[in-house]
Image (cartoon, rainbow, N blue to C red):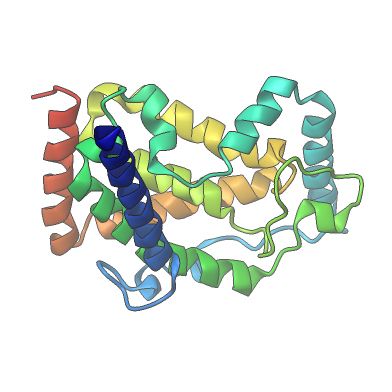
Length: 237
């Protein structure tokens, strides 16, 4: 019984530490690797279509079409993918791709999140696009309603920022990693909280942001450490 209590205590401490780490990362503050201005999405992204334009109406109809056809399995997948966790990629990595095997990698990706989250938040505020369920009450989300703006999709950005870096670390799994990112991103449409063009803007945002990261020497030094740790955890040379 004593061993069980100790084991549970360690698990609780680990969980608390991880929550605190990502909470700090999500809080806007000084840049860790890059300044948000280095990936100015306000200037790079095309503005979203007006809701009363042909393109805007087509974007909304695409959300409604997905809603009409979504299966119970797709709904459950979208609900699970509402969590912005690096370990949503575990199903295409390996079972050994878990936090206790990747302490440096966890810190690395939390710093990455802190930097790009600020750039995405700025773009959301700048474009200020209402969510689909705000624009049309016929849209019925299946997850907790986000309170921020719709464009670009932060979850899609998250998916592609991480996918690009993970594929660079483990090119042997690149195709599966990018396929998983696409599912993660599309699940925001399935969930009823994003338009397809929000998701596409997230894919572009992730690519732009990682291009800036990969040109930063300090980032690359930490990336190589994380890459070595990931490959060791997966049993790769």
